[in-house]
Length: 87
Image (cartoon, rainbow, N blue to C red; front, side, top):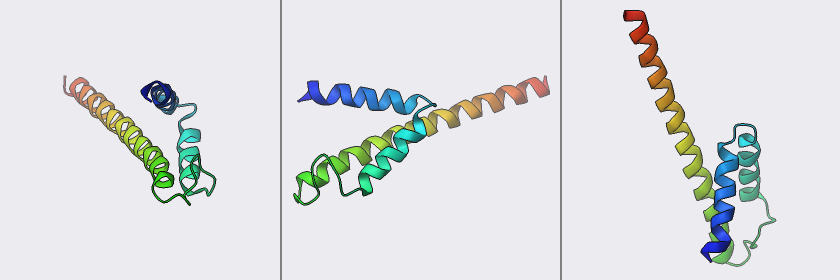
């Protein structure tokens, strides 16, 4: 099963990290979560919720990692700017 899901995860992650397509992937993921059209319909009690849970987990995980990286970069740039000003 890993050979099916790993390429999809790698594509999702790489595309989300590309700033050109980031908002398209985020909006697409959110639309998928609220849309009645799913890979596995929500009418199947457990299976229908699992695919939504996987998409939501991927979205939250990747977006939070991107935000943490941006925050780290801003702090580093701010520290460098303060060091230059005080020097």
